[in-house]
Image (cartoon, rainbow, N blue to C red; front, side, top):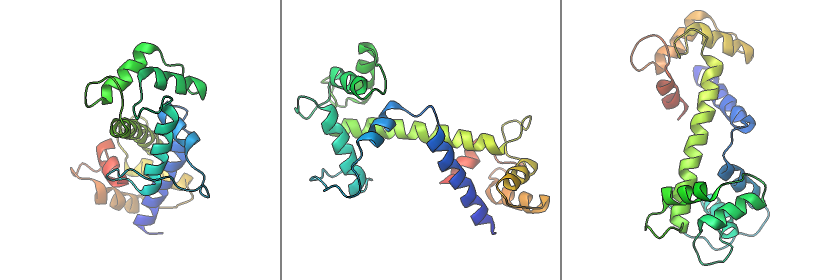
Length: 194
């Protein structure tokens, strides 16, 4: 197996870790729960930059579900009610207001669709970082100072069924070791996973 394929194994491990994470955000769980099935007809789409039409459709569906009074805005009370209804999280009034305020671009105390998309992006990025940290933790070795060493890489690849020599592991690390210290830090790992 080539170096790129071994790294693909790392990417697959990250996906598995992400799916098994118990700290998945309430928004991510809500989005998955309300995502349309593959064979459902697609509603008309609002154009959202950097998203596929399928993702935009899913976001619109979640937004419309939360927007109980159908005014095109999500209030803190609607957010709180929705999360309680689907059994995901009991959000206090203060927390709901803080969540809305964090993404409210026009200061009206409500989330428009674009505000909602920004909020979901932040939640998604936080979840992605948690998943990457978990995957990184699988490769790093205790006492290695928060880095992936050739020895810890060899050990993890062996667990994944990939037998590598120490020299091959050193070569793999050199390929992504941006500062030349012979190990992969979390920041280097994040870049490698892009």
